[in-house]
Image 1 (cartoon, rainbow, N blue to C red):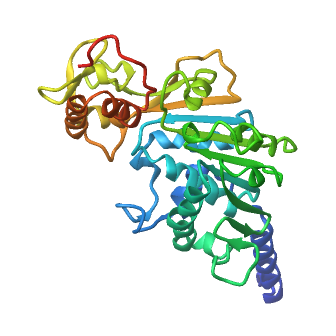
Image 2: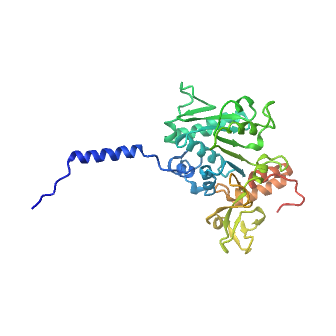
Image 3: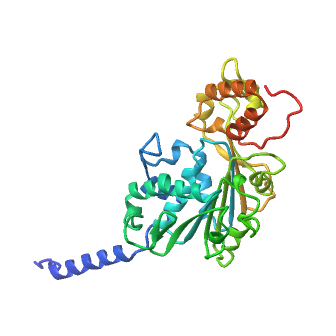
Length: 349
């Protein structure tokens, strides 16, 4: 009888060694920005009512916006939105992804230097502190590391520089692959004597074939709104939900909201459904300008879609704004509907 030969222990150890080496040297799995955030991002107690692990499904409209960063054909992303839809966290997740997963030089452009400092201290620093994969790569601003200050964070393979649109010197000094421009409707028309701050920042990206530009803002006046003009030249995508009754997709529109029972009427079958029933449907982005190039994607969001705003409160705020006059109503339209203000010929509902 022939005995089976046992594999030598040395051979087993060699195989295990090679497996370990391959595991170490293998590239990390390809992650999109939303997948990175769902895996690694932590929300801070000081800046979020829902501290802990990030979950994109909490506000599912954010997924497509975040993952547009990973589309090689998309260079510019426009977000024209109301307040309270999570647009700052979209910016945070893009920064975190590029610090940890795809290092690059990043510029965050805010209306003023003071706002840049505030964002750095109250949002960016907290994300870095509470997200373990980031705090190992970015030194604390209080350390003696010269690469890390309130307005600049160095990390292996790149840096984040935070600048004000009112500071011309900071807009023309370095190459940038990722430009994140927040609240663009509040930028000055000119950075000192240098010209349009957004154009100056854009020029910093020209040397990169894989550059990404993200413009975010609540709109202001229709005639002067930067974000609205950019949105009109984009794919013009609206977050749409299917009617709980007929299943036809449509955006959540203020004109279809019924005050008396706090419902929205379907544009097609005219049935009314509650906020819960509408928001419980699976949404998708639908382009109003499908012939536009995917290189410039535009997303519009209003507060009716937000998980942090409730229709009853929005209706109450509208009634209060209407009583207080034109200026307050204008602010309500900008910050709740995410629409630019145009003088109204007739009365709103």
